[in-house]
Length: 196
Image (cartoon, rainbow, N blue to C red; front, side):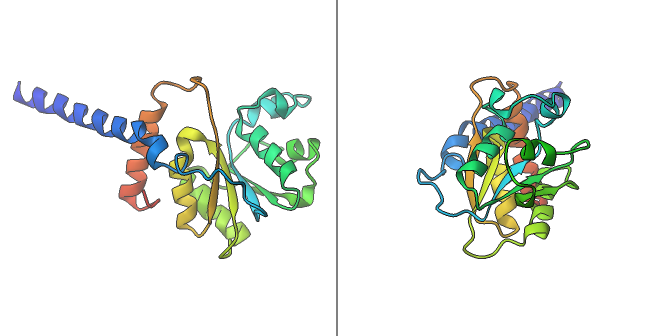
């Protein structure tokens, strides 16, 4: 009986910890600190992989059909900053993101695809190896709002000065997503993969 009580207390403690992290997300995370002003001349726009399959499966589908997606937001930013590189980071099935980005008018020479990474820490590390961020450069980071704090932390750790551009979702995410992400942030912080 005593072991069972300790077990349930442990579970409750984990739930409270993850809830606290997720509940304070907008106040303490990169999203909460997102600057109102736009960067003048970013070196590049980094889009974390995900959500590309719908475009690959439907070649005639326009990104504007999914305004609340990483791909659509990154494309809009790429058009707003025509001199910035567009870096897509993450493994994808062939032919990958290049053909989709070209289809919406982004020249191939602007597109960089980092296709080795399988998680957020690798996204940051492998992208840094490709583009070699320099002091004073601003990099726009595009990912989901609930994922931005961990992603920004990982990219800053490897030398990027990040301007966050989170993709906000109006209640369409799984209810457990904030808890799962909070656990991921704790694991990353404890393992030293990201700074928080």
